Image (tube, rainbow, N blue to C red):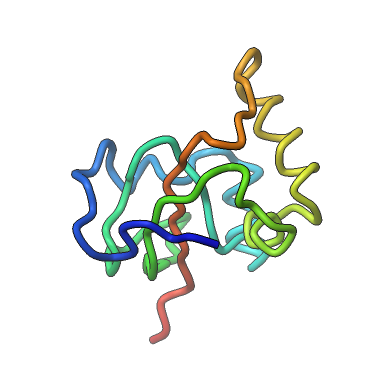
Length: 116
C-alpha cells in the first residue's frame, strides 16, 4: 500500500474534527472498539488531535491519503466491516449515485482511545 503524505506536508484541513464521525452507527462502532479508522473525501484532523464521542476521547494517530483501489479487508475491518465489499456497499448506500472509482483518493484518519 502506498501512503502518500503520511503525517508530513499534509494539505490544509477541509473540515473540523467534530465532523469526522457523525453517524450514530459509526459512533457505536468506535465506542465498542470495532472501528479504529475512517475515510473521508477531505482531511478532518491532524495527527495528535483529540476527538470526543459521547464523553470518550480518541487521539488521531495517523492521517494519510489512500486510493479506494488500495483498500484491503484489514482496512475494512478497521472501518468496522468484515470485507471491502461490505464497506463499499455501506458507503454507496450513504451516498446514492456516487461512483466507486479505484483511483479516487480519500483521507484515512486512524485513531485510538486516549489512555489515562
